[in-house]
Length: 295
Image (cartoon, rainbow, N blue to C red; front, side):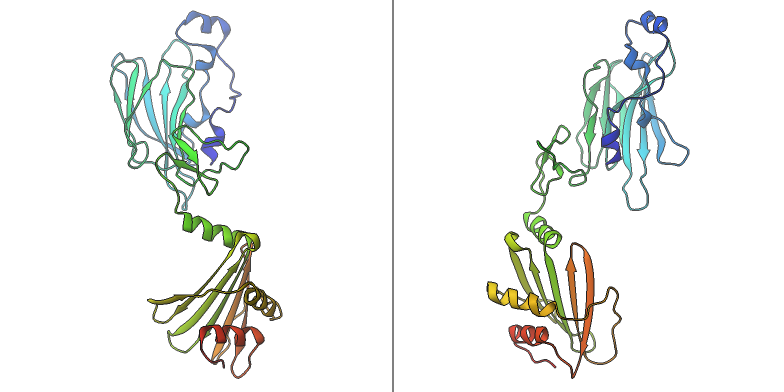
């Protein structure tokens, strides 16, 4: 998460002259540095969405929308602009990895209320006179890793079982996490018997060694699913039989009645086709497990 890494990074812009800083007892030298996340960019990565001026006219609060590209949701950055004297300086108050359409409302000359910083996020009130607080960060749940030692997440978040930061009160689905971990750490084998038309019989096996394994059978129609339980010997025999097939990175389906074998390891996928009347030891073993004939 680029925003999270940028928060708190030192800014190399020169500070205001020392005499000017001393002339304003309300502003420290740090207050005269403008956080780069608070500035709009020409490439559209950050655009100013709205602003609101404090009742006494001395401060201006801003909401900028962040855009990381077509596959990244819009985020939000909330900043406050320091009053004169001195050059304009913007201080980061909060950021969110997914914007909920943040709105601003001044409750007093010091208190700024921000609502919908993220979808379904409750209202937050910031005291702009407090200088020691770190900016509030709201990454998308699951969008920020926390695999360090010790694991760290922004406040209001915790390190979940998938080693990513989740909002307090929320957690990922353990079954989804286990399935993703098995596929990431092990070998996935899929055998598809094409029965013609849109009918097929698919056998899948995930083997992740010490992490465990899963075997499932999906039969047309899609609603008829029967789990399979394999012994370690059966699992080892299937993986050994699969290793002898002539795999290719992007095999094309040949004509005729064929079975497709797909093998994935660490997200690298290869596949092979065996067409009737030919067969292979792997297909014979899987057909026997499914209670069907091949070819």
